[in-house]
Length: 583
Ligand code: FES
Image 1 (cartoon, rainbow, N blue to C red):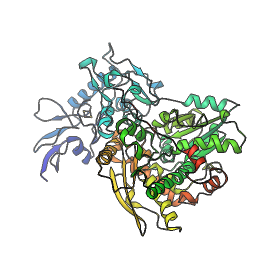
Image 2: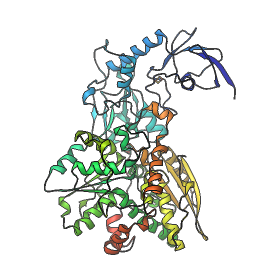
Image 3: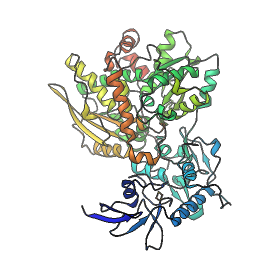
Image 4: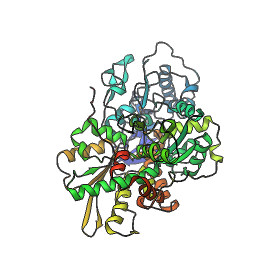
């Protein structure tokens, strides 16, 4: 590749052709502020925070989109540059709702951080503000125009990463806004509630719909038994909210914190993930043996479910009929647990802590109930749990590691890896291989299905006579690639597909702690958080296969009967239907 030689802040530098000034500066340990820039996703030069001076050029240039050229001399810290950045920031702030003290993004706001770094102490530009709407009609996402800075990161993520494209720019100049199509509410367009817009918003313009007060009210109600369950991926990231490095395992301190918040029982969604494997694996075997619809596609991710219902309804017969682990847990608590503990399910409140905003949508689906009792009553995100812990003034970092409560807190390594892309597939294959070979297979690290590559295909020799062909994809664009192949008949020889709505799977879900765009330039948070789960699987758990979970074995023996049997089907399975795009 052609090399380019130039000067940056007086130092000679040589980089490959096509390198931007921002990238070159980074290679030389020079920090240039950014705001609208999202590496590889939103490189549009909109905010002008990254302006730099090029000697001899008439205008300052946006470093994030300006490729270096032979012989240029770049200044990243000249008085002209500093002044321009400050004025630009003052202009952005002049149109921003600056109620920072009551904003959930305070202290994790890229705009607030920049104002401090650049030394803005006064806003000289005051006057009329554009954008007044607060759209909170969605079950999952609140959009606040008064805080939007028009960086368009959400627009790019929704369109380019998730292939949903329900957000866009409207108007010009002062009337410019980022809005859903035709100015509708997010609730009334084909939004899949994944929350990727939230975790990529630099400010508080997009947030989850908070259910924290409803959880406090339930805990305080003496007539209610309040049970909490936590998804696998929450433990991969909760610690980040309390200053731990990305990639720190939070399992024990999370259980301890939940107990101190006042929940009557602290259970693990991982238990239900093991049940999911029992049900989904049996369903797959049934389809393989009885000529059912193949490939079968996983149904754990509510963002993915809304995606297929909205954009590929013709492929619905491919979906497993299994409820998600969140809802399997809720359904079992409202049936088996309620019966065995003499609790009226109407006096029970099941709270889920999820890495996901689409779970808030999922729990409200009318079909997800057992005998009229909603499976899960309240779903909060990892971030909301962190806020509750802070509000209760629990000293999280000082907490000892504690275990989940018995029975519904028991799980296996197969369950915990559900939180990473490829994890559901690997968990299913571990059980399928044991059942079909009728032995306890020791080689169970199916590394071919791991990793953050967008679309993975593998052939797994489950028995000497059965090679199962699998496909794994995560994030809407990759899912769309697979779905286009599926409807075109190109995956006829594939048996099993795992699809997750968010890039990297649940570890990078829309409800997880928000990491700045700058940090994401250096760290692949998807891989770091996934490592936590694979470590928990291989180093911390006694059993690594779902069918070996002693409590799950007991549940089937004493209550459910056969996997995929009548009772299991009644409690643990569901149906799907086409959803309108509404535009
Ligand atoms: Fe470069 Fe926004 S214009 S970061």
